Image (cartoon, rainbow, N blue to C red; front, top):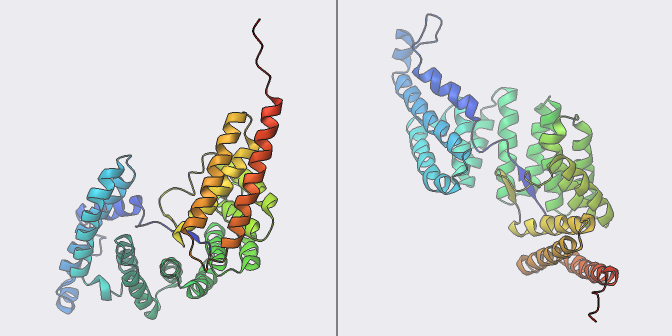
Amino acid sequence: MSRRSRRRSLLPGAAALLALALAATRAPGPAAAAPTVWSRALDPAADERAALISQADGLLVRYERLRRTPLLERVEEIGPLWLREARTLYERAGAATSREPSVRLRYADILESLGDVQGAAASLEGLLRLHPPPPSRADAWHALAVCYARLGRYTDEIKAYDEALALEPHAASRALLLANQAEAYMALGDITAAVEGYRSALATLGSLDMFRYGVTTLWGLAVALDRSGDPEGAFAHIQLARTYDRNDQQITGEGWFYVPAHDDAWYAALGYWAAARSAELGAARAEAYLQAVAAWESYIARAPANDHWLPLARARRAQCERERDQTLKRLRKAAPSAPQRR
């Protein structure tokens, strides 16, 4: 039941939001699409809504900048305040029922970032009922799939990715969708479909895209291979992933989550185990084996009794312990004996 999901971003990109904020403060030129007398007569509240959205987007720009600082405690303390204020402004501007796709998508992102995943899903479903243009539909289906993942609605998630894939023309974006869908298949226990999905995603990527999307896909494939009975294939793919991301930052960075939450221990266990096998120093190898066993124990302790992979986790722990003991025994035999005093 593993699932680890990549998001597009928690909110619109900082550059896009900054452009919105700058546009809101720029004096309108002759070519600007300023409301006319007639449009104001048809919709007197349009100016007020635009002002509220502009004010909210300014808060989102500040939030995006804050997220990129090393002061994590400030993000956790101040960030939610700005997000809640932005949510209030969006709702005052009628975002919940807006027919503007970008507004509706941004509003759903805010809701999900604040933990209201059900509300975000409902907003996205409402947007899709309006049948927006294809690019917006692709974004909406992608965002909705992530919401379904968080809600444990894996079958709906897979269908949402199918809808997004039918609309997405860009290879890198398609690879991301395919990899996420593979993770959903793994959540349902369909390892064959998961492995095929990961391989399809990797086949779609160019060499430069491997740095952005390939690392996490390789990790997902590694876990799927391990769960399909091919741990050696899993270690090989982890080694390949680490040629692009030596310190495993992409699978521990923001925008990632694990469903179920205890699944992070499986990734950690395989990662430490792979590190133990490749370590050159005996002390480093011994420490990595200890961490791998501890991660397996964490998975076993946290997994519910009906977890698909619990029996295999127990078997992997025992296998890792045996390998650790055999390795330490060899290291002790190979260690030079201390010189005797005379």
